[in-house]
Amino acid sequence: MAHRTQIVLEDEQYRLLKAESARTGASLGALVRAAVDDRLGRSLGDQQEALAVLQSTAGAWADLSPDGEQYVDRLRTGRWRSVAGEPASADASP
Image (cartoon, rainbow, N blue to C red; front, side):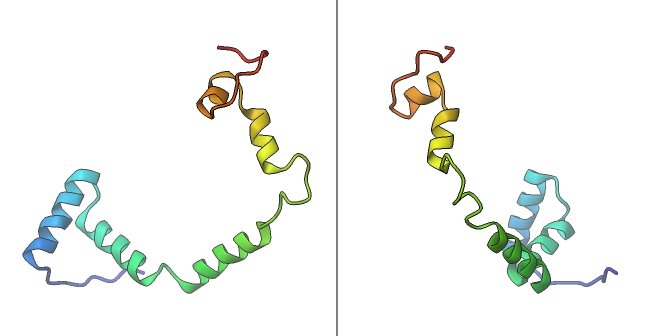
């Protein structure tokens, strides 16, 4: 259920809101709702759910071989190795 309300903005707040609306294409109302969500939080339940997911997956790679660093190194080839300051492997394509 949505509720309609009125707010009073200072000139600078309104100017910034209009500029962001023009830049993003979002309505003034959508921007105000997003700001309220950012400031006050969408809901405590959503935050707790997100935290539970993070906690349940933390360290998920710990017992696997290769470790994360080795896995990423295996994915790097040619140009990406040279960007990382490593010699390009012979089997890498240009």
